[in-house]
Image (tube, rainbow, N blue to C red; front, side, top):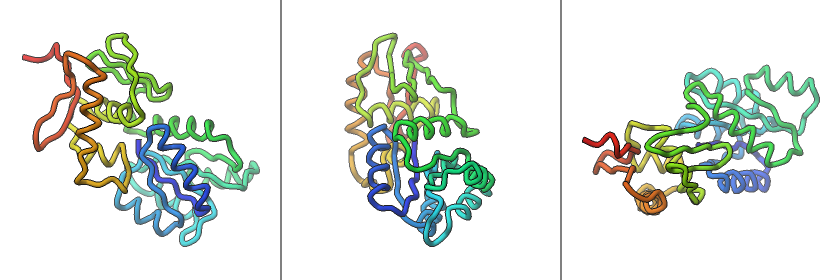
Length: 224
C-alpha cells in the first residue's frame, strides 16, 4: 500500500510517516499543497492523508482536485477543526473520511486500511493463492496453515505479489508499491527481500522470476 501524507507540521509529518512505515506501508511526504499536487501527478497512491489547512494550495482545494480524477486515491482528511459542521464541510469537499486532531495513531492506521479496502480496485480483505492466506488488516500470513514470521517489508512484498497475481510485478513496481520515492531504483533491495521471503515460505517454491519481466506467485500444483 502506498500513501501520501500531506502535513505542514514537519514534526507531526515525520512521526506519521515513521509510524505508517512501521506498519508496512510505503509513505511519501509533502508539506504544502503545491508539492502534494506534483507528487499526485507523478505517483499512484492508495490513500492520501490530508491536512486541511495547508500553505500553497488549501487542503479543501487539493481534495477537490483529487476527487476529479479517475482511479483516484481515497482521502482521509486530518484537521484540528473537529466540530460536526467541520466534518460535514470536509466530507462535502470529497474526503472519504475525516479524523480530528488530536487522534490515536492506532485509529488512524485502521481508518487508512479501511479506506484502502474501499477503493474500487481493491481486492477482498483476505488474499489467497498457492496455499497462502494473507490478511493485511490483522497482519497475519500462513502457508498451508503454517504461520509465517515475516518482516514488515517481506509481508508487504508478499501482499503486493498476491494482489497483482497472476500477473508479474517488476522490481520497479515493487519498489514503488512497497518502499517510497526515496528508494534507489538501482538497489538490489527487492531481490534481497524476495530471497529472504522465499526462504521463509519454504518449499516447494511459489515465487517465480522471469528475467526482464519480474516476479509473481504461482501454484506448484499448476505447473506443467
